[in-house]
Structure formats: structure tokens, C-alpha cells
Image 1 (tube, rainbow, N blue to C red):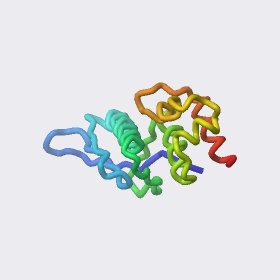
Image 2: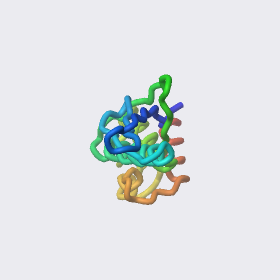
Image 3: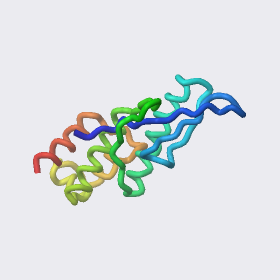
Image 4: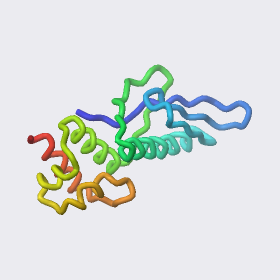
Amino acid sequence: MLQFTYPVKLTRDRKDGGYVVTFRDIPEAITQGNNVEEALSEAEGALQAVIEARIEDALDIPAPSRAKNGELMASSPVTTVLKAAVYLSMREQGVSKSELARRMQIHEKEAPRMLDPYHQTKVVALERALALGKAS
């Protein structure tokens, strides 16, 4: 099963206060927060942005590793998780956006928008796309 909950390390920023947040599995995701709660909220936003950028740039999305002692976990919103799952499934199977549109019986312009982070794709459409990918 695909998972998109990643371990994060919170490091106290002794100079400026608060916490610096880093992801071992996704090094470009770095953020900060004034307290633990804010740092975790910012971590979720950073994770979402990196996953979306990796989809847009046609890059791999690494699987999360297990948390080490002292690490916390951060997740991305469900729509981003579903878009990432569809994207990874398409990559794994070599399915183009055109082929996805054909399989889903939707207009060819809809398939690219489905993975667009700025397009509000309905969860049911993403679930359907993911199910089609697993069935073939």
C-alpha cells in the first residue's frame, strides 16, 4: 500500500527561536515553526508543495522511511496523496495522460488537469483513476 506520511526532524533554532523542520526522505522540504504544533503544520504544507512539484516536474516521489527515535510524522492532504498515487501508478505502468483519459472515458484535456496541483480534482475521480490503474 502506498503511504505518504513522512518522518520529520524538528531541530530547535537556538539563535532565532522555534524549530527548523527537515525531511530525511525529501531533502528539499525544509520549513520552520515557532512551536511544535506550528512546525508540524508547516511541515505538512512543505510536504504538499514538494510532492506537487515532483509531479509537475515528472520526478520520482520517494517512499517514506520509518521514523527514527525522536522524529515525528507529517502527512499531505488527501487530494495531494491521491494525485501522487495516481501519478506513481501511471509511471509504474507506463500509462500516458492520453491513455488515462481513454481508460476513464473522459476528454483528453481532463487527464492532465487531474494531476495539476492547482486544479480542484474531485476525490471520486482520483479514486476512479487509481482503481483503473490497478485493474489493468
